Amino acid sequence: MSPDQIDELLHKGIEAAEKGYIHSAQVFLGQVAEQRKTPEVSSYLAYCLAKGQGRIHAAAKMCRESLKREPNNSLHYLILGRILLMSGNKGKAIDTFRQGLRTSPNPKIINELKKLGLRKPAVLKALKRNHVVNRALGRAFNLLGLR
Image (cartoon, rainbow, N blue to C red):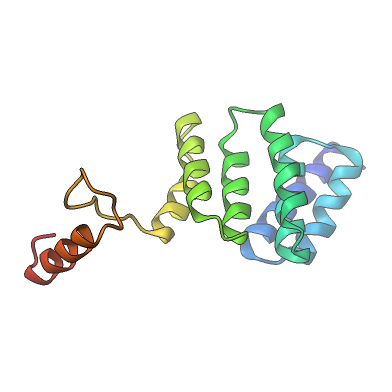
């Protein structure tokens, strides 16, 4: 297989994964992985593993290994964050997305963070965000249009 064909398969695999066609993405990326096992291919295969087969822990491990190999590639942070979201770990996912943005601005990470939404700061910063007083003041300020 020529390098151009491998690049085309890689592009098709990434596009399929981004659109949610996980089975097709696995097929394309599997063919690419036979020829060229890069951290990018491993990360996308990990995403397909988590999304398609529900093997989230194995996928997160694969993605972390790719991160070790290429720590300055924000793509790995994006995919790891998505995997963490699938596992229900929203806090760690947001931290991972933010780490990825520190390495390089990635519009896909920004979109993921926008989907999650931003929380407004606590009214009284001295108290925890889930404290009864903070919650009550937050609701009251919202009703009054002050937030």
